[in-house]
Image 1: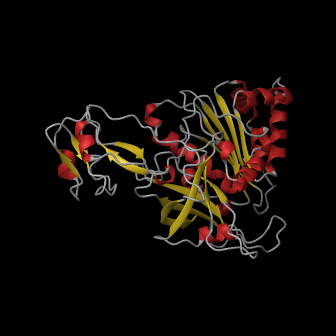
Image 2 (image 1 turned 135 degrees about the vertical axis):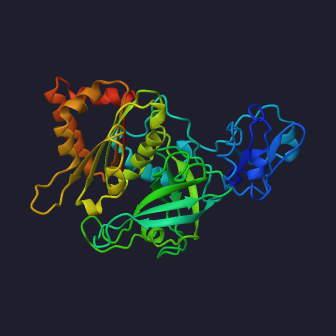
Image 3 (image 1 turned 180 degrees about the horizontal axis):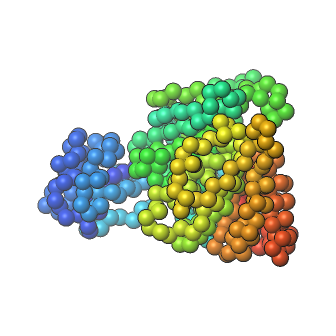
Length: 404
């Protein structure tokens, strides 16, 4: 077996539901599908994940994948009566994070009281599959500016394609990027973490890709000029460029999966990345009618500086309740996410009382105090005590914070 850092994604066909109609073999443009008298199978060394065979398959048998260190041979696949279980190795947990990642994580999760358990119904995450010693390599499939060109708040949507390399993620997880080169002291640059902005089945479904939301850093929080090494590297990437990636990371900030679960999402700026992932996951599964309510409180200075503003406005009203706060509109009083939480106090109080509702906060650390005070005010006005409720929410894994 190869090392865990060399996991590959293998396309396989489920022999139990395959009806041997030959549709997959006929539709494959590169002859990667073949068969014998027992099974239809996929040649690992030829398959390029074009997915041309997926939609024509009448049973869905073709739509199966495994993460493997050693690909299954044709002989093994021909012998199957059922698909083998997915036994992708897990390399490490959050206790085994690189020192720099652990430091960033400790800061980010202070608002939820440190490392917390995920919701009880969250899917099982894969962690630390790729390390600095054995990074994954992704190809830039797209790099698009999300915010208006005439604003200094430059935010990019970057799509990374992993090709045959398995990089399984869940909504709420993050990955690490190490910019090439060295710092002024001649040492390699530190890992920079980015929350994943696409759902678990990819930015383009089933194409083994994912997206990130990255802000170009040209000034510190006091407005002093500064050059963000990682952010400028990422925002300058061109289609076809190669990126070294480590991770995935994160076993706490995961969305609940049980039917009827509701989610309150509170974010600013690039803190929208995990919220976009959760929202898109729910949108793609709307037909199943399994989700509860979805609420978004999203803050920016102006609409032009709010990433994903256009797509947000097009989301079905029955999917999500969108509340946008702008703090720098001309001739308008400043408004922040905490103000909107207070305005929707009756609904928020109802959700706080519902044991199937979960809160996610992501963005600048400065937002934590205002949001905390807003929840306290809502509770005060609806017969609850926030100081007593918050520990209950934390203990039930219903309150999750990642701020920087």
